[in-house]
Length: 326
Image: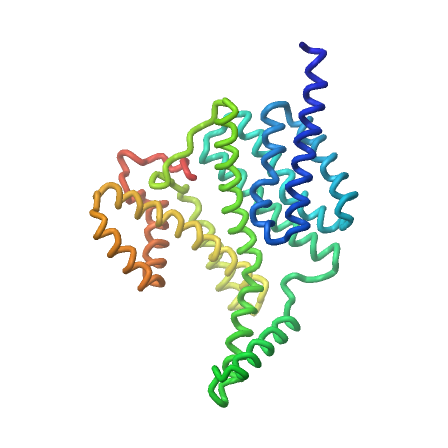
């Protein structure tokens, strides 16, 4: 049996490396499928690490990288993809192999995925010389084209072009500033989806996996509030000192915190919906009210999430473990 094991590991590694190449190459060749590739590509490596070991998974990642370099022919693009997805697959395999609690595993994987996404952003600037945050020329051109289309369609009142142009440029400028935060948020979402799919796959393969907590029982640790504290400090400090870099950093931290507290607020709301056992008609009315007054509803949900992470507003006696998380 021991003499057959290396051959089995080699064959399995080759097969899953080839599967990684096929999935990643599909996203590179067909860009609309990249969204699905982001949470599917790490899974073959995770399965390999769980079934074999980290060494075999790392070797498969190297083989997949070499094949992608040869087949696709754009080393920078391939490198960005591999940095973002390869280590995440290896990490997920280790987390499943060591049966790390689901909340902790998702949190660790999400932090690593976010760091890798920011790393690819920095490397993209360094290797290509193109600043992804500097879109001034493109911003002006896009705004001009859009305004011209509105004008041809008769949707702009005379004399309103400058006002609309300024509004569009502000929106695009803000989107550019929040690009790092949006990358982090996308990484959080895709990492959870990847972990959930891995959870299903390993259960299907007969492995013991730690159960995922129900959404209504999700809890975040209290020290998440430091994102808000640091975000406000950077934002106000940068504004007072005239340092746009600090201001942008504060905005990104606040944006990420707002997303996390919104998710936690939805968890709190679902907990109380299940606890109160509301009728379907009441739930429909509440859903309609949320849609009609969504800015106010989002603010309420984020506040609920913040309070729950600090005070556990659901049930301190029964839900006092703050480390459960997603």
